[in-house]
Each structure stands twice: as structure tokens, then as C-alpha cells.
Amino acid sequence: QVQLVESGGGLVQAGGSLRLSCVASGRRIDSFNYMKWYRQTPGQRRELVAGINIGGSTTYVDSVKGRFFISRDNAKNTVYLQMTSLKREDTAAYYCQGLIWGGPDIWGQGTQVTVSS
Image (cartoon, rainbow, N blue to C red; front, side, top):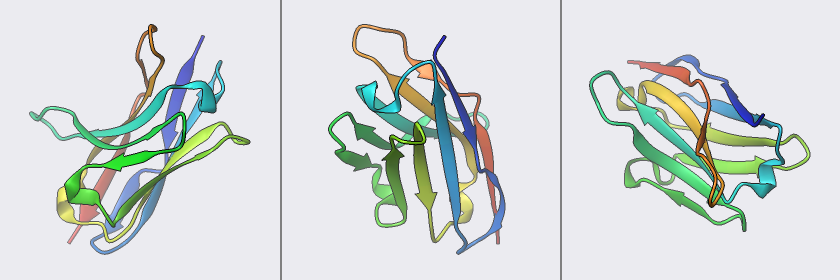
């Protein structure tokens, strides 16, 4: 069974940094066609934050460009989201998603990030 488990969330002051981790089990992290980080606040739709494809190309939503960085460590079977210069509006539950073409989307359980002023 393929699973994704996020960690690394917490409470941080505005301007601070956090690194989120998404560890895969049951499948090699570099075999997912796409790994993505989403975030969601109560009552809002889940928003795509960043993604990395199987070739290593990355994409970001405009609001986090230059502040968030997605990366993949194949040896640790993990995808990271390094978040810097955090703002209050970055407060959300962050979710990791793994995409396999022709297969089901795999989601983690989420990790909460709270940015205080």
C-alpha cells in the first residue's frame, strides 16, 4: 500500500522558516509522475502551492515564488517544502499529493502551519 506522511508543521513567527517533509512508503518517491504540496484553510478550496515532476522540474503558485522551495531526496524517499519569509497568510493545513498516471491520487494526512505576527 502506498502512503504519504507529512511532518514539520508548527507555529512560527512571521518572517521565520519551516521545512515540511513528505515521506513515501510502498513506492519510490522518484517514480511518482508528480509530487505536489497543497494548502487549505477552513472554508476554502485546497490550493496548489508547489510541484515537482519526475524529471525534477518545479512549479510554484505566484504567492510563494522566491520564498518556498520544493525538492526531492531520493535516498530518503522524501519530498520537502522549504518555506522562508513566512507570512500570516501562509497559515494553513499543508498536504502532500503523489500523482501516478493512470493510478489513484495519493494524499497525506496533512500538517498544520501557523504563522503568528
